[in-house]
Amino acid sequence: MTHRIVIVGGGAGGLELATRLGRKFGKRNQAHVTLVDANLTHIWKPLMHEIAAGSLNSSADELNYVAQAKWNHFEFQLGRLTGLDRANKRIRLAPITDEQGKEVLAERTMPYDTLVISIGSKTNDFGTPGAAEHCLFLDTRAQAERFHQQLLNQYLHAQASSETAAPIDIAIVGAGATGVELAAELRNTAQQLVSYGLNRIRPEDLRITIIEAGPRVLPVLPERIGEPVAQQLQKLGVRLITGAAVSSITEDGLTTKSGEFIPAKLKVWAAGIRAPEFLANMDGLESNRINQLVVRPTLQTTQDDDIFAFGDCAACPMSGEDNRNVPPRAQAAHQQASLLVKSITARLKGEALPEYHYKDYGSLISLSRYSAVGNLMGNLTGNVMLEGWLARMFYVSLYRLHQRALYGNFRTLLLIISDHLGHTLKPRLKLH
Image 1 (cartoon, rainbow, N blue to C red):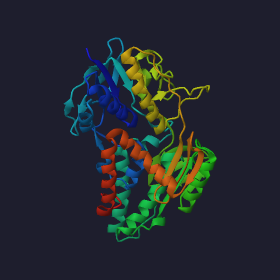
Image 2 (cartoon, helix red, strand yellow):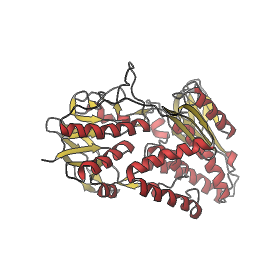
Image 3 (cartoon, helix red, strand yellow):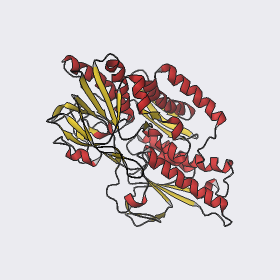
Image 4 (tube, rainbow, N blue to C red):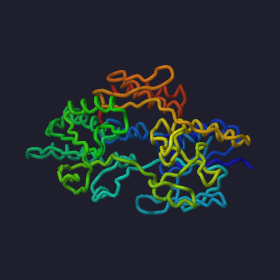
């Protein structure tokens, strides 16, 4: 029987893995590769802040799983993982319903010989009172588009009103990469909307505040990156509040533990991550306090050699370090996907599996069209600090590398040309 490889989760890592395994094994019928995801299309998660601000049209940049599967010799199944039967090596998928609640796909099971779980993470609001009810999150395309629509509605209402437009207060909880990139992108959006005639709200009347519990902006990155980012945000008129944990959130704003109230019509929670709750009770697999599946350096789960996990949903130990796991970053998921291609090749041959060693190639933070800041690390470059136009070009190249892994060189080149032409033919901002 052909070896059955099932990959659950079509994020950056899972989709890249399915694509590469399909090309390697599916084309020659050496293994049957299936990708399972709860959505029909893929958007690169680091772009969610651009979708929220309207500077990226998600419909133009989405990838269709069904088409990708056809082009790369794997199978796609629409479904959401809800259960695991390790004894019989089967996963259970929840039923799929349409907008009216009518069942489209019934609950079903799917057999596997090798199972790879790469379902990513979602924002962790740490149980903060009012966060789930009053904050928007940027975990999915739908959430990002909801924020964009609410922001655009504020401008459209002001434009049609005869009364003086009130300022729009936006509060962003978390000064990590998502929070600071969203703030800069929103400042660009405010200026672009005025240029398109929605001028009742001036750019300075879109008042943006970032609240960070840690001592500084980008607390998990080196201070030499965080400091210039903070300076640039302040030049853009973004208010920064650090060392202030949020204690509660209401419809009108949020309150810090020190008692300060910050008014906000729109509130975004962009602090912390956790894996989906159901992973904590997945047929005896070991998980940690934020629901990540605990894996060994081979990326195999600690309780089952036939099940692998990687990316944000996996707690993988850092080699040579105690009590530290690989950080939940896109470059880690990409590296792990590349390793798993080798691992599954070795597994099919009955050979020993390689171990994963995280390599930090640096960090890049985009501040919309204004700037970018970061560092590159490598054997040839050493540790090089970048800022401005050059850093922005390297940041853009990360997305192109992701596209190259999925589409190949020629189609990626065509996409670059298409995007360049599109900038001259379409609005620079999504206005609907």
